[in-house]
Structures are given as structure tokens and as C-alpha cells.
Length: 198
Image (cartoon, rainbow, N blue to C red; front, side, top):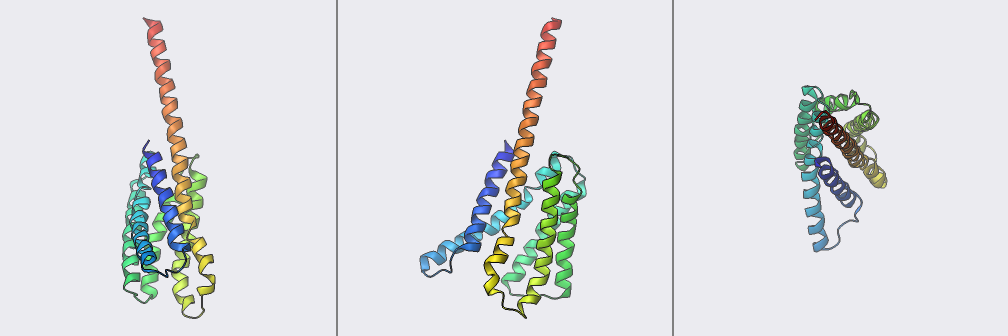
């Protein structure tokens, strides 16, 4: 049941990502207000959705360091977000810092062993590695090349992680649903056997 709720939250996050990344430039005061609210919700749901990934590691009893990697990822992104608000200038230390909070997160998903989730988890890991490299490269490229004409292209790339989150929690909904059905069948079989013994 909880994974159904998580899936619904990630779908809302995906829709907000669409709105924030692909909505036209605000031209009225009302639209500026709507977009501002959508952006705040987007940031809030970003941290919520990625925190929910802890539930996948816990479901499969993965190593504890993987939970820590999610916490490091969220902490690093909060710093990244506030630095972007202050328009801090990217430098080598900052880029190294991005690697520190992305790489453990990437490795955590790339090394998942559960066969039913492994392909999606590894695809998500490789995608996040690409996103990490883009975060590192884009500030330096932007100083030399006008990327405004490629805005929607890069926005489309950054749309893939929310899509993967929806797919991951959809898969977990299916997997956990099957497990519940199997447990019910086993309980039913056990009741029949006990009844036969009586």
C-alpha cells in the first residue's frame, strides 16, 4: 500500500517538473505567482521523493551504507540548491563536492542484487551519473557558449530522473503486491493443512 502512495507522490513530482521546466516565460503577475508556487513545491517534492528511495533499500534489507548515501545525496543537493540561489561561482572544490555526494548514491543503486528491481536500479544509477557530470560541466560550458538555444534539450534530460522515480516505485508496487498475494496464499494453504489435521 505504501508504495502506491509513493508512486502517486512521484507522479505529482514528475508533473511539477514538466510545469517548471517547460512552461513558457511568465508574462503576467498571476503566472509569475503560479510558477513560483510550483517551483517551491518542486523543490520540496524533490527532497521527499529522493528520501522515499530509502524504502526500497529497507524493503530488500540492503547494506546500511546505502541509506547513508541517500542522506549524503540529499544533504549535498540542499547545499547545491542554496548555492545556486546565492549565485555562487562554481569552482574545482565545488565540483569535487558534487562528486562526493553523487557517487555513493550512484554506486548504491548500481550494486543492487534483487533481480526484479536490478535493471531499473542500474539504469537509474547510470542516469544519475550522467546528471552528475552535466552538473559539473554545464557551468563552465555556459561561460563560453550560449546554451539558451538548447534550453529545452537540457530540460528534457533533467526530466528523466523523475520518470525513473515513477518507474521504480511502480515496480515496487507490483513486487510488493505479488509478495502480499503469495503470503495470503501461503496463509490460506496453512489454514487448510491445519484444518485437515483436525
